[in-house]
Length: 319
Image 1 (cartoon, helix red, strand yellow):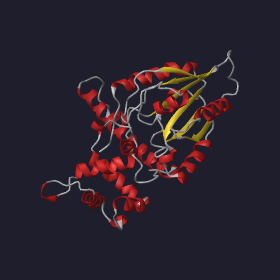
Image 2: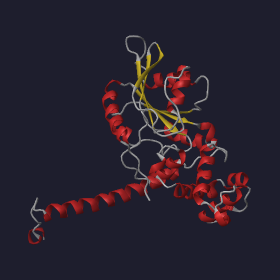
Image 3: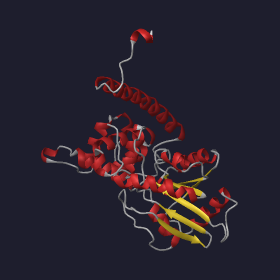
Image 4: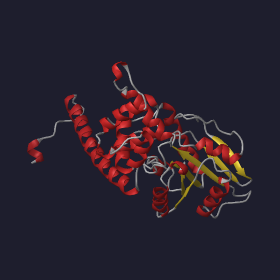
């Protein structure tokens, strides 16, 4: 099942970004270092109109350090883009961010031409926590829930450096199925928009292949790579006491345990995708999306013909 979540306030945020970008010099996109491809908003490329982009891999202390290095190299190889890793609990991140922004827009600076920066990111990526760290005060609301920030606000990081914060925003349709699951596992999608068991099974499918030792150590299991996803979830439920009447495993509770342990990083430092993997998922998603659009166009054409909004094509003239 494809996971989608685009509440009404995100439509307003999209419009607000489109208006604000006209007076912006650099765009900071805050990414989740555990899923850098899936947490990058493809809608921003259209909205930001080619502005210089600083990709910040946040929560790098929760991510696989080797994969973080790989992702930073990937983004730094792109034109007009800089990338750096960050942990929102770091005490002096402002200096690195300000320096990177001035490198991307060297003509800005001083009171006459202050740097104007827009910071964007998916819900629950740690943007509000980072802003509070940057300012040294509680400038933005925080919480372990998608969609806390609802309004744009301007924050001054220096006399000539203005940061515009926006609410977390996804994009209207997620065409990469795996991204939907990864976003749900990370907490970027409201819990009412997905099934915890389905997300936990997808998560375990990836973890047992790429991080089996971490799963075995956390849940005191062996040979997890040989288990089916369902058997692994059942074994975790048994180990963690997620049981119901008759000592049967409560799979819902077991799924919640798996997702929580991933989000809290008690499983270890994990990254759910590499640049190569994400490129493959995206290519497959684009093919399926194109096929979906062809079917949609055919249905719409048939509807217009049936309701006589357009004439039926003449097969003889077409031949």
